[in-house]
Length: 338
Image 1 (cartoon, one colour):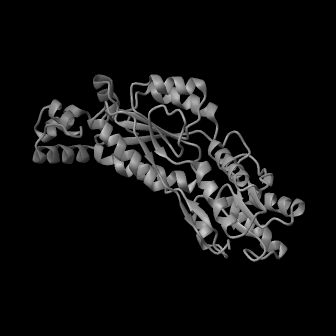
Image 2: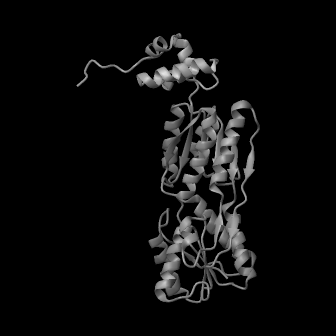
Image 3: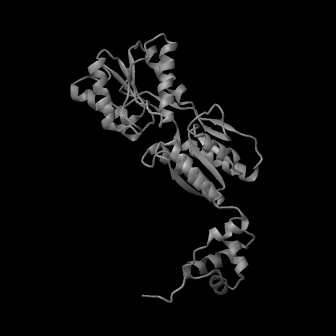
């Protein structure tokens, strides 16, 4: 037991490095006016003593934090992980870190998190999606920091945008199937209000089918988001039981598409010989499944990288007018579709 042991202080580091405490403080701040050899000596002393710089106290004095607040709907979704990973990588050279808020596809939980995050005075806020509660929207509009909405193209953006139209992406997939002579097409998922992007994909499917003069009523609910492989299989079984003449199925995600594929395989239904299947997200499981699954790649890492570049730009030019970076999702044709 070391009851009298105390953590090393900035003064301890200054004494060991032979500099003033103010110089130590500057050395720990990105862009601080300290000679490289002096900074190296200070960091070596801090490392030897086990000193950790208290950025909270520094932020209180300067009224500027060193983190960007980010909200994501899922911590298990590989797409959002890729977005956050690219965002983290792009910000670290600015001396900025990411503080994550997990909404679980719930806009009311997003509201609670945004209020909590704003109290901590983030340098900027990056949110997933463009639909929010009225209270969240008010808070973000009144925030004195940049706001970036990602993974969507909201009609009435709050600030900056890095995203794409989920509806348009699915519309293109319907066009692909119709061009190949398929007209009895179904959609699995996207019925829950919580998953606004899934709802947009479902709406894009219905709009595309109507544009082609086709029946867009083959809509199969698959449970609340995120839809699992098991739920995708259950939805596919229901579809095959009720609409056995279906020629193609578009799933809200690759996970649900993989579940749909396994349901067909258990029934001895040939994919794509008897029915074509497509997903969304370009997940690894879809690339290695047999057959591999046709999908839409939303470029999640690109979303994060561009958001980071935009934040760095706003650091230098904070009065920049709202910017909209449109991502172009790619259709990846694989073995599960004709």
